[in-house]
Image (cartoon, rainbow over all chains, first blue to last red; front, side, top):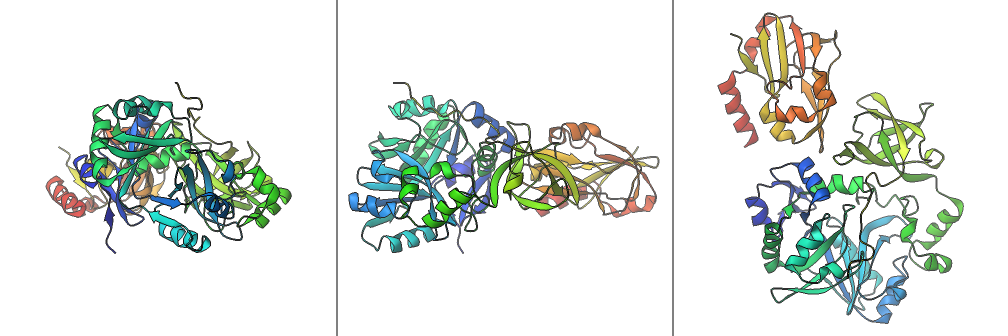
Length: 368
Length: 126
């Protein structure tokens, strides 16, 4: 299969990116400074992430579309304000997760940002569920970049006037070189930041301007350490079809109003799990020493019984130590429960902990 | 003068008398990226040529460290366990991994000299 390249490929090359194949795309895993420096630069200054491999699905429609989407997503979409965003999931009838996503209400319908590896399948599923009643465009002509970190608001404002006024999880249309760009205040690093949807032909220009103002390109490697420190899930690892949003400890993302009525795909299971509890649940796990427990590491209790598995684990540069998430039998999920992680044949002590590992600094009330 | 030799697994080894100091090459650290964890063999243990004698982990993945010769571990470098980033900073000198009292001097002959290793590293990373 031919691997695809994003519109920033040339710039990545010029910036000495090391590439990996990810979801069929040639993507930068890191640049010359390395993952740890890139991670810290994002936390302390501002980093730019090429996430153009992710799906940008525009669905066009009126209140009928809103009603139909409410049958799919556990969200109170009819009360979602224009240009506001929600985190959600596409589930199967057993509440297994096909994908996690961000959905934003636009003036013509909805924009849904999908994971790269899932987007084509999501499109197929949604098209079928919506019975082809609405125009759906998985837009390949637009790129998507994220700019994240405490200096990002100022840097982006210097290039695109007005973005500073956006609140967290809301967006709007702005203009860059007479092009319509859709910018939301969001991201996946635990930092304040923005995601910018822009026509392919202009993304290189915009990115270079942001670099000139002091931001830097950051690879997928640091994106992974940043999101894990922030306690955020990565689809295909922390989330998949064998896990439900309740098991994933994401019930905050399910609308209470919708739970009371049910009537969305997977609602039977979700309501049952909310009422009766779950047998396994996602938790944060902090190894006591420096040992790194990676995905698939087995978790044991104090009596040496296998009680769970790590789904993401790495070294957290800002935490300056190992961090992990995993699924564990519910009775061992309480904070500060001591567990053991089997790494290379030896069991290492660790503790169940709250998430995130690194405190978020999202902007709730933006400066006017 | 002691000569530094190199293995195909990207370790360097420097022999002084019958004690060999072993670490990983600069080339290895560049391939691994930021090293964030190091595990060393136990002092007093015996290690066999080409067997595992430690682990290094970058943010991305774990890699075994092999010993290019057999011997008894007589010393280990705790400084790189406490601060693994030292391995990226000075891999071929202060960030050595362990010292062995070697058993069979002739095992050194199977290893590469600097020129051969540089060529090997260039070819395998291309």
